[in-house]
Length: 218
Length: 218
Image 1 (cartoon, rainbow over the protein chains, first blue to last red):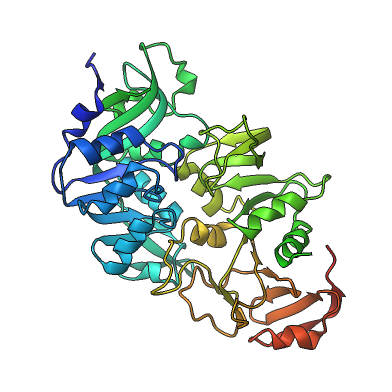
Image 2: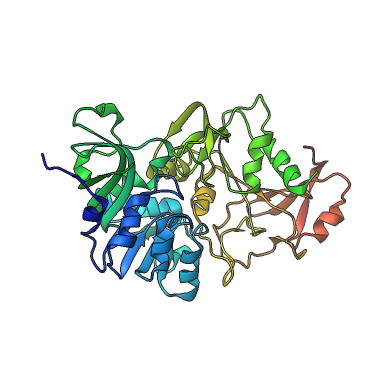
């Protein structure tokens, strides 16, 4: 069995200039703070794309990362909690693209599930429909939304076993589960690490095949 | 009684036993405080909770149990957790009975603007677009005029839209107004002490007076 456990610094070292990075979490909930801190402090890759529901809050390292000038593109849904992302959108110092939250989640799901895109009525008649194909089915208009994938996903879980199986508790599941499916390399930050077989299969939220590296914190 | 409290109390009366309800951030969240004891509703938080309980007190705050506003909350008997992808399956699939949201503007066609003020404030739409398109019923909780005294219930929305033709009921400190497709805005209730003329004067759109016009009760 390949040993997936590693340090944050080692795991993050594979992020290169120009990479796209999914960051799990919803505000502070289920946010992989240690991994983002390592990306901020121990990796100098630039021209990054960040895909995150909200780009976190001011107390989190992602705020400093967005502020560092290393992030050139952001895909998000809600950015009211990170004024720096709002500033980049206004000044156009970075390309900030906003999506309805369900559309963002579904784009990532489509990426992970090998779909060519999906049709949704959400956004019809709003500025979200700009530059998108509209398709009418049974007299109802839908937008064609394309799948979203990334080079790396940074996610947070409560527990991992040696195979990479993850348990994510409560409302921390949010974007962490779907992001695990849609990136080439998935790094999970966990509070607990156990031997294979110690997690009841009924309780696995993310099968280990999706997880490339595990970083235990705390 | 303060306006916001009055509005929240009136909206609470719209909820029926067994409803699945999503409350937006701010005034809509206050609705939860006034739900009658004999009415059991399941509150949904789009970050992945069905069955949101009251705010968590000191000592019971858990990082794995936050609502969509980032507040620590408790669970109720029957709560379930899920990820963002599943959460928006609930929202977009029509499994939410009522969503209560704030609005910057609403118009005669039920078009809603509630997510951005160009050049000033762009917090992102979060889950609002998904909610107003997916929920079975959209109730707007809003003050009747903005802080400059200008009507927020208008002939045609000027701000960027959240969605087209979705609002069904508007509750303000002055009135309860139903949006009837292809007909317009029907004034159903007015606050105690006000006249129909008072409400019309604070409303840009033309109001159709219901033959069953009542006084608002909370």
